[in-house]
Length: 266
View 1 (cartoon, rainbow, N blue to C red):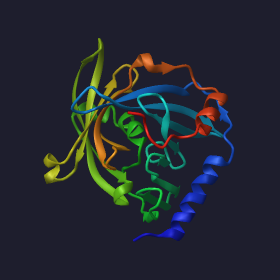
View 2 (cartoon, helix red, strand yellow):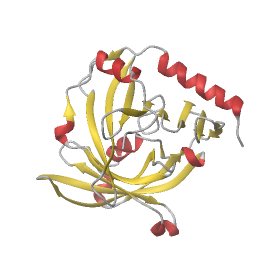
View 3 (cartoon, rainbow, N blue to C red):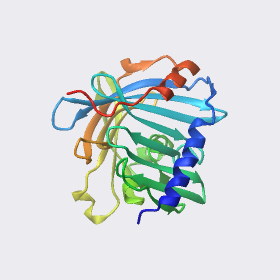
View 4 (cartoon, rainbow, N blue to C red):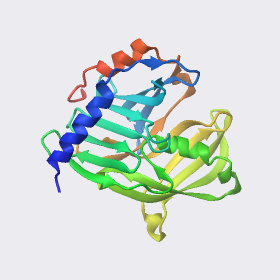
């Protein structure tokens, strides 16, 4: 059911978070890097994602600009670690269609929401707390938290929030194997359905560098939709060569205010 009143609350609430005034504080772990998303069945570049990771008044914050292959930004995502790094709040808006999704609120009083396009109503549902809850980019923290446990070939349960379903999907995180990539040792992890029919559902494969537990490749379903409005399977590479100097306050303010284009040039 469309819930316009709650949708208004969602919009006002997240605008307060985003526009309250960003005053980034530089810390040693601040990051600025770029990932390139390719079609799963070809080498065509679908989009690029530019990540700015910084502290805002002691709250870990991530700003992601999604860019057309030609460079123009078409979508923006804010991620705020208000409830732990593995289950942050976030808000994603794609200007090409007006699609929006996210999670808002404090633990015990959170909402998950989605909006199909700029003309649709916002759909909102309460999001009850769950053990092993993971939201959006929080999977990266969850992998590192279970790094040593998974060395023993154990599984870690994941209650992953899927905004389009206005709720959770039960997954399991497993340690697939170890190997090398581009001359460095890596570990491969897999997120898959935690059910007997999981063999028929798409999995997410993750490749991490073993020396610093840094994500190098994501192979799975993206929350950036294709021209038909469908989620698409992509391979996103995060090469070390695309790691830049920690972002300045000016860098972040510029990324936060860049206008989004409504379509990518062919």
